[in-house]
Image (cartoon, rainbow over all chains, first blue to last red):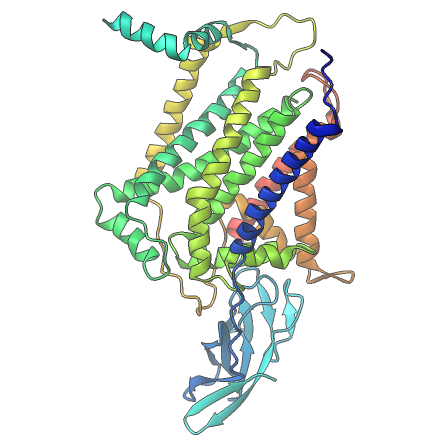
Length: 146
Length: 352
């Protein structure tokens, strides 16, 4: 008997049904599994402004605070001015800190350096830090986007 | 009685054929035979990883509120907990080292050439899985170093053109490194990666059995051999004891540190650096300027690393000679250059 499989007729039909059946089963298993693996989007914090705590920060110092789900940095410059930035380094996502010796914002991960306007002065970060506006209301510092 | 039991087992399993196979299997003897032991040592360390990992699972809890505390509990309260955790961490590092030695020895002996292309490819994927084991396991104690290493590492995956953001969200379980990331990494570390590794390891070992060891000798030369069992196995066993001695000493004399608990809203600490096997990439990324022509420096850097690793992985398809005996000065030079780069940049990354 020749060992060739017919591609038409009843056998061909059954083979086509089997193949599409397996294919469809595979897709119907994989699609929900793939969808399951992707996390559902979480609503970004709608707040456009947050409190950055009390206004008792000493000149030439800084502190980190939460802005929605991300860290932000409140800096009081040596001249006494309050400034706020996103604390997420634009290079690879590390959290930056204030260096009171160089009066710059510094990222310990890959040595990125920013001035007190958020501009990159050295290292690999490709973009400046996002700057926020600062309002001092009585004892409290309010930081807002834009 | 014993004979009846063994006969009964033999009738149902046919294990005699395995014994027959082992009787006839041989290993070539030559100046580079010593390098054959590193594949086995890597396997031995992997088994230690599995066993100590199972022990750690009895106490570890994969949530941001409990992960650090549970590891602290293991190393301070559980009897021999410090030792089990230290062995798990040290053995992970030694396994990567041993796998790298194994890879470079295969590279320099040209043992990846036809017909062993798939052995090399499966070995490279196994090495990638070992690095993923390291990367995912590093986060599990939820300490500061691990938190930032994961932030940087997943952010690097995020810059891949086209699919980057998808990969980033898949790895992190969201936009940021959070408890969702920890749960995912735990799942990868104890279920997904072990499953994939086991399947691929069996494939890799089956290919090694099929083609035997590459002898690295000119054709026509009669290569002296030794029986695989017991001669080679006993020698390999000495290698395993050696690895165990190194591992035991390191784990006991330099217990793995736990560090401080991760705070997602604290700054990255001074002197932060990743595990030693990512140091060369880490240091290179520090040096790359922010812009190369119109592209972001880090994107160019990561793409070059990715393409370099892909090129290395596809080595048997560049170098299409067959057999290990024919030399290729350019490729040997490339191997020496890659090792020199890795050693120098890792050292600079650690100390600068």
